[in-house]
Image 1 (tube, rainbow, N blue to C red):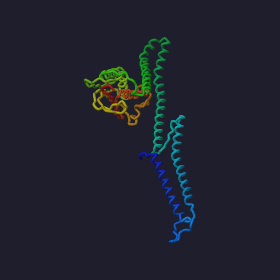
Image 2 (image 1 turned 120 degrees about the vertical axis):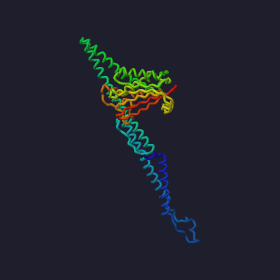
Image 3 (image 1 turned 180 degrees about the vertical axis):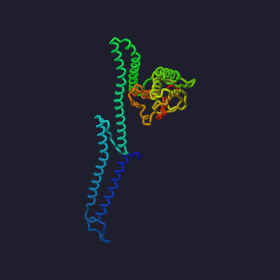
Image 4 (image 1 turned 30 degrees about the horizontal axis):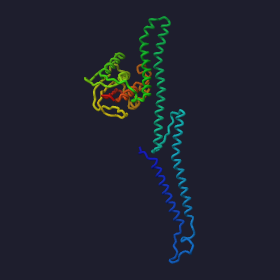
Length: 371
């Protein structure tokens, strides 16, 4: 890719070219119009006459040619600048009218070209966001359909007087209601972070032992998915971390549930390791990445894994690598988005390594001390 060029430098180059053309034209006109002969020695021109004879039309011709060159240069320069601006304006108007596929397609390597590329990138993001929101509605509609249908069936059974069958459905209804609450809670939490602009969101921080967070997450995972083996390794004497316990527990819960969903082999264990690390990647107060001491939560599975292309979008809202609408891999695609936003809000860092068919490892680094 060629390095970007400055529009101002190009305009200066055009002006210099015009001056060069003017100088060449002036020299040529002078050469063909000025008299080059000299009077004999000792014989000057008659009194009152110009030494080179009558005035020539050279200066006038030079002036006319200069004006033509300047006018032509101005027209070419204006068209060269205005044409891409009109093209970009047309694309902006089309996007504003709802054409999500429109792009400026400017191939220039100056500031106007950079503006066009920024517009195209923005249009790509808007298109992905709107498509993701449409997918969210489809996901929510699907996730709500099954529990609501089961609740409706149980109510019909109860209204028919079949109390035994209605009571038998209560367990499934309780699971369905819990799923509904989780979906609503995920959406509300995502909206809360969106309004709070991520890291500026006020957190209810308190000092918590990392072991307590890990043990509670393992217990919840065992209660939900008792058939899954969990390998847990927690370093002794870990220092406390200052986090919002409710939000941060959701980070570990979401990662464990995600590892379970995308590891079809129920005999394959999921590993949770909690360690102290020096020089971990952390997020500074200004958003830049820094290094420091941290407690690291590492969740590893041997599931389906993610391709490099999928890893680029794994934290996008409403995105899911598994497109099926099965209950085993259900959800609205907000789990990893919430993980990323909660970790960022705590000044921590998240790193995911994955390979298709080999599994995924997620490392959550939480800074030690107040941030």
